[in-house]
Length: 385
Image (tube, rainbow, N blue to C red; front, top):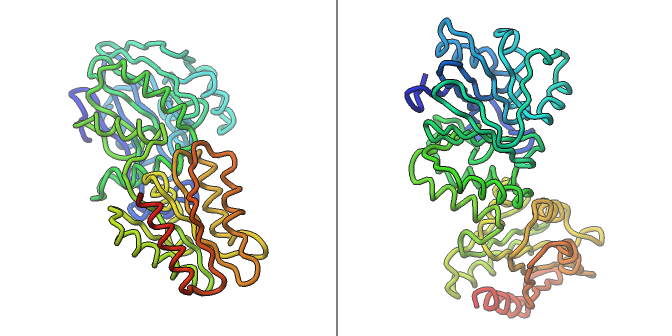
């Protein structure tokens, strides 16, 4: 098994068979379910794995433990990809103490028929547990992104066991950029809870951290300021990169053409980064990621049944559900007899904070004509300025 420090071991598993994480996020490179063993006078295991990998995980744990039984199973998050193997673990090690908070055990009894009363050890926020050389301090992180979540700080090795924080999609043997899949993971799953992540980051600033051990993705060991900085930007809804995302939906290609022409105008006007995406033919989670990454967004869609084209309406709902704010939004609408999409799209951001709407609106009546190009140039100039 992989050593993290002299006494901390990685015992997680890679899932290369999964196609959709949480039943909706595409994961072409799979996902990792991380778990850790801390060897000490009293042995601790941090979190379990998805039920599909229970036996592989138990084998990994046993390889590290040898003949010694664990004293503690520390449960930081009750989502089934991390908790589904708790029952099997307790059956294998019946004297283990399951460590969690009051909300943890409320959920535990909802997921399993087994009575864990004799095994449970309830901890409170900021409470510590000494296992010999290691002292673990439990820091509650409610709604990052479930109410029972807690992270754990190991003062001996200066480790932060960060639950789902700082996680990413992708198995550990996948060769891919951390930020891209971590950003898609963050805004898809945690994005709504920016205020709660900010509260946790403030607590983390008081700790001396040398390694971050998440429940998904690689252990972070170098340049931690980079990762903490990204999380600070993401959770405060700041603009990570300057650029314009053009997200379009098109029935017969006319709205698509207008979106493509706008992209060309933006590039000609000196816009450094332009992302053009067809909402009907691309990964919605990646589109959400891009919308939060960049500071400006253009939504282009036809009127459909007197309303917003469905794929566009769903995309906007995904943005507003996750607290989309502090951005500039422009609109392209299309309609042969009653183009009302721009008005309706704007209304869906009524509860979004600090949104600036571009004054220039591109209205197409069926097909792109000379007057459409004038409106496109006006919108491009406004966005670039």
